[in-house]
Amino acid sequence: MVLQQELQQLWKVERPQVTAVIHEAAKNGDRSENGDYIYGKRRLREIDRRVRYLSKRLDELTVVDRKPPDTGKVYFGAWVTLEDDNGESKTWRIVGADEIGTRPEYISLDSPVAKALIGKRLDDEVAVGPDNGRSCFVITGIRY
Image (cartoon, rainbow, N blue to C red; front, side, top):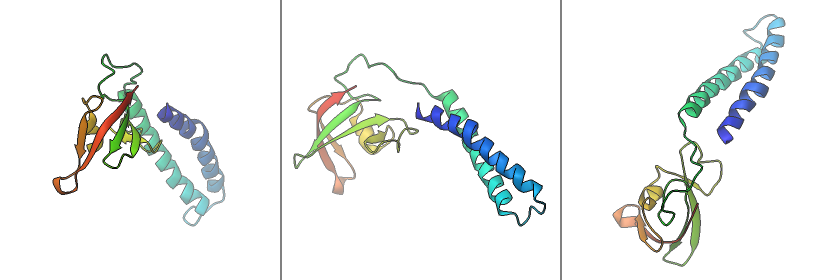
């Protein structure tokens, strides 16, 4: 899991390094004009904030590691291939909000496209967007 790896990196590698830099900088005396000390303290606060966030999220997350009972329908975790009116295909995977950004083909479960796809089947038409700029797609593939 990417979030667990990030947490381990921050807690086991980056935080000890920053703490060591702060400790050395503090030995040099006047902390008010010490760039290493000021930057180090700021970075340490950022790391601690991210560690708290990741720890809370990891406690709440549920890993979905099995296929749904009906693999012919679009559910969370599905790879969905859509074809637009021009015959161009695009494949996306529906993931949780914490996973978007890890790969360009991942879309959030909360996105308008994913919301329109959930529960649909192969060859269903899906319309996304406001009425005046609506895009229409056909589901050409679903895999898990």
